[in-house]
Length: 279
Image (tube, rainbow, N blue to C red; front, side):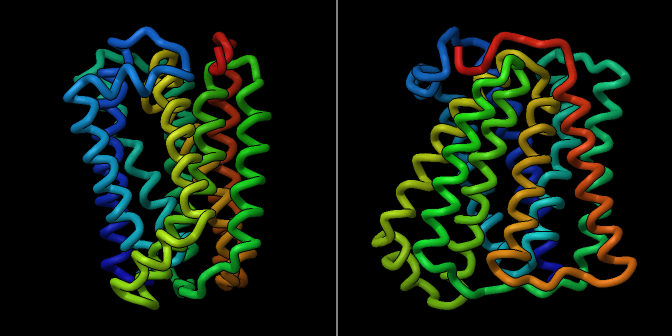
């Protein structure tokens, strides 16, 4: 595993966590449905600053994916959600019940196990064929449509997680292209029609995550989102990018870590139902 890649992953997680807290602060000041919330927020300078921080964190994440495998990068980035608990309490006045905190910690523990188990996996740099990228985008759109129909406020985080899982795979594609082509990758990516579809999926995910922030604690929504946006790309790394699944005890540890993360997500989703995120 690349140490610079691991450090960049942590930096990306810390940056996105602070951005999420600022985004929620602004989202609470806007009363709008998921279809118009981004347009309303775009008029607020602090939200735009948070978006700039989020975009910078995405660039750091793409660099991390060029240096380390998906199975290490995304759980380390997701572990940054722990920062949302103290930030949420101090900046947003949020309060956490024992069961909710335990579920968040379960997600983070799963991320730590996945990181330990994936330390021996080498990063893959081969670019995916266009058909595979279109299949990922289509599957994400369908999955997001289904999760957005669930009668729970947590569905907002789940929907964003499905979409961010797809954009994470595209982020890996960005990192791989730059690792192989250098600056020429800008032209290659801009000429790919699927690239703009993934940008659109990211915008839709952003709308759902902000709607979720209006109805739940920031760390709770982020934990649900991260569990999905971590588990699916990690599996895709083995299936699509042919990153080698670790054998023996490391493989069992990796599977356990993914199960713990998903278990924490399910525990959070069992909270008392809130209005559907598509309202």
